[in-house]
Length: 288
Ligand SMILES: Nc1nc2c(c(=O)[nH]1)N[C@@H](CN(C=O)c1ccc(C(=O)N[C@@H](CCC(=O)O)C(=O)O)cc1)CN2
Image (cartoon, rainbow, N blue to C red; front, side, top):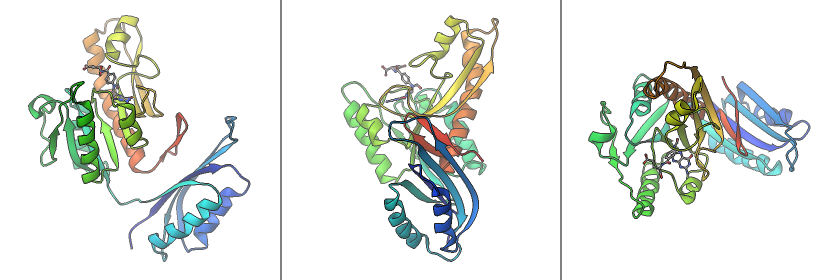
């Protein structure tokens, strides 16, 4: 019998829903470790939306049987839900173009046991000697070059790689090619990008140049889910740093690297721990 399970769900808000979910677990001998919920009263046309994350010890019940019984419960409440094992590492494909600082940071946090991930592949649209300047050890590297004429094939190759490796998550760690709408839809909710600006400011290419020319006093980074709309996916995590008039564009790039690394790592941790729920074009993040 494995360790704790994590149940995440969303549904139309309804009186007593929290009690019904916790009672469902209690009646099957489960012991709740952590529970958080949020009721989005943002005035959606469909009404208030309820979100919940429950970590629990299944104790006596088999997770397969629990899932089957919860499936009936979820149908009765029109829930979107997921049941995951807390101790199962998240199988991750990490994609990179020419700047590997975020990639190397994720690999370090994996090697030290900080991030519960299993990096099943590293993918770049550039050859290994261009894309990777650091030791990535035994992680398989896949060179997937792309041109406008080969984009369909290159994207199909990524889908095949994700399927073959049963990847749970694709991380765009400064991967600088735009996913087609179809590719973004294929990986909806399981592809995270690190954008090197404090969105919604400075979308698109070369955000540090844009920021320098605008004369900003703060720079930032944003980790978000990838959608067909460039740099407009639901935001997971952001952070910023102050800069001054004396900082050059190169200084912004240098100072930005540290922000990008920590923002992406935190977003991956939140995803791995099933703490991020998508709420339209926003997220609900149940932080520890
Ligand atoms: N469908 C999506 N694909 C990608 C997203 C996204 O949000 N939705 N994020 C990007 C990463 N990114 C910023 O974080 C980004 C990448 C590329 C560009 C861009 O304009 N690229 C040019 C070429 C630039 C170059 O080669 O240096 C282009 O493709 O025409 C802007 C932002 C990853 N993919």
